[in-house]
Image 1 (cartoon, rainbow, N blue to C red):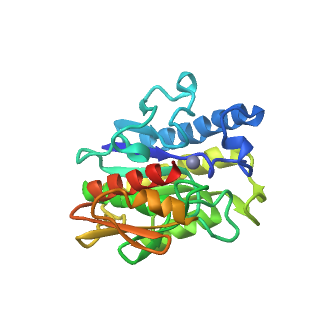
Image 2: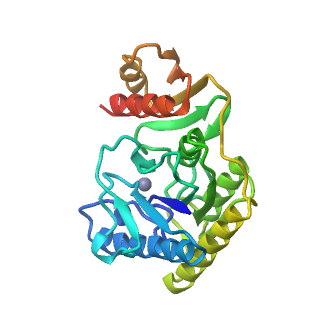
Length: 273
Ligand SMILES: [Zn+2]
């Protein structure tokens, strides 16, 4: 059994502010350690349930947040950027299941810590075909491209609800109850690590029993539509051939999800200037 743990930082235990997830701020050092511990809890749970290979993708910011010296030695770490599959680096047909750790809700969500979609300064909304989604949907669709299901998510209550809405009944570890974009009632790391560990264990057991929702596979062709915050961003994104524009919305249509993911990332990189 081979598991990919795809991580982000906004949904990590105790995080409520941008400073806590932004390199260069004093608080960041505390929370990259906390991120590492949330990930370790998932590695422990997955391994206890029989996973013999665990790969971790560091998916926040520049992909250099997890402290490798503190990482459970049973896992290997994909770190640094840009990598071919970004937040999903390590995904391929050999992976049996994906665990999301530290995930956050899509931009515009109420009661959601640091809600955004890929870039908080650039992207207002993203649709995959007609499905309004966040990073969780993009990343789950990349897993689906390889026939791999997402089996668990950790984050605040809104992130977990958005993931189960699109993917079905996956395991959820709610580490905090958000009451605004920057406020939440947070559980202690002692409690959340136990929760994440048990949740990962249950998810891998269910995966082995065939009791987990199907991989997230989109109808082809796949249209990725990005609504940008301003028209100059859309101006730059439309320099990519074969894009279509309507107002601040730019879409690109591809025959399969790996290319659609590349198209999405290229649009956002250009738009961000
Ligand atoms: Zn992030």
